[in-house]
Image 1 (cartoon, helix red, strand yellow):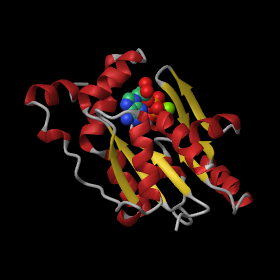
Image 2: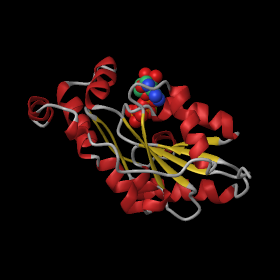
Image 3: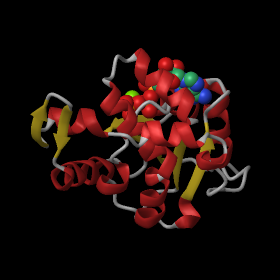
Length: 194
Ligand SMILES: Nc1ncnc2c1ncn2[C@@H]1O[C@H](COP(=O)(O)OP(=O)(O)OP(=O)(O)O)[C@@H](O)[C@H]1O
Ligand SMILES: [Mg+2]
């Protein structure tokens, strides 16, 4: 039996493919997208804007997201954002999809966005350390967290895997991605030199 109402979180480092796959997932599940960054910006939940980006007021954003979810109890939602572990409350969430991407592929995505090298290294090293996964498990509990490696996959394939997993056709797995095992010592040195 497929779930009629789905509350799914899609998180992971910037550039791993959250928004691209979330669009497809939301269409499939007939769900509304809540983009945490968008919601924070539209509601003044911003602490400061720096040259490196915006700093979101996670406390304020958390209250806004909770009230959006509360208002439509019978609707499906896909909540997207790298800040999800610090903004979304675990109650009522069915699954948290943490998207992962290999350091080299992630660097390519971020170079395409014209990020400066310091910001690229910051994001790639966070991905190598698996901070997003660790923080998601801490916030939502291991049972709700599923990890998806987007490297070498199309956004459609990633979206299909997420939909199948949230519908419980597939078990939720996390902890199998280990970038340290696949990159060289030199690369580690390079990404962590900031
Ligand atoms: N399997 C995949 N799933 C999703 N996106 C992918 C995949 N493979 C490649 N991409 C590409 O990765 C790029 C980055 O995706 P996207 O902008 O969705 O990242 P994001 O995680 O939303 O980043 P941010 O947190 O900064 O908003 C896009 O160009 C997208 O097409
Ligand atoms: Mg995005």
